[in-house]
Length: 136
Ligand SMILES: [Zn+2]
Image (cartoon, rainbow, N blue to C red; front, side, top):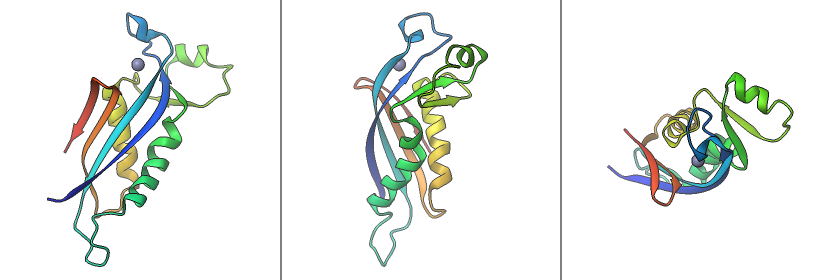
C-alpha cells in the first residue's frame, strides 16, 4: 500500500469544562495534525493525490473551523458564558479533548475526500509529547 501524509499546524484555544484542574480554564495549543491517505496511484499523474489538493481539503475541513478558534463543548454552561462573545467559536458535541477532536477531524476530512481516497491514519499533537491518533 502506498500512502501520502500531509502535516499541518493550527492555533486553537479550548477549555475542558468538566475537568478538575487547569484545563478547565481557557488555554491554547499549537496543534499539529498528520493526515495519511491511501488510494490507487493515478496512471496519468503518478500520484495517489496531489499534496496541494490534500492541503486544500484540510484547509476547508479543518483549518477554516479550528485555526484561531475557540473550541468548546456545546453545553448550556458554555452557551451562557460565551453568549456575548462575537469571536470565532467552534462548537463540538463533546469536550474538545485530543481524542474527541481527532474523531471530529476524521468525520470532517472524510466528507471532503474523493471517493477513491481513503484515510488510514490521523495523529493530532496537542503538545510535542501528547497526541491522539486514529487508525483505520
Ligand atoms: Zn488543552
